[in-house]
Image (cartoon, rainbow, N blue to C red; front, side, top):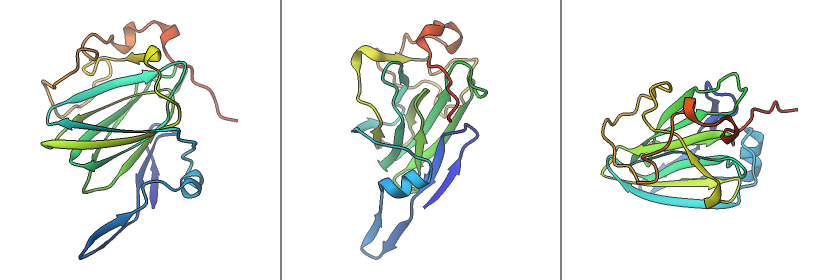
Length: 187
């Protein structure tokens, strides 16, 4: 597999090895030792699978007391996946990375804890999978506006389908500081 650190330290783009033949393909989507050597920590404690239609935008979500590192990829379809560094004191605070993930390109993103995450669906349907380093905690849900002008995320949709939960989220500049994670330097 090939692993590339993005312009946000600690966030990685992974291109797994895909073995194809006339029958189809085979690939490893997770192998603890190989991914650990590539700076993608575990343990992962929860796997999620979402299915969405074209134009759906989910996010930008994060948890504060139970921050989740996420390894994300698309099983079928295509999405534009985004992560934003929202850690107070981080040298890359407020910066984002976006990648096209699809069932055809097999790319994965590792998003470390302390980042807000979201994606929008570019295909008719997309099956999106993610491994999480902490459990989902409904009482610890936070989010940011998908169209925060200060972030200037170059979403490939202008009028996405949003959930009622995602509509009223604040901009990064209006989130109370105590509702943002803190940047911690690794030893």
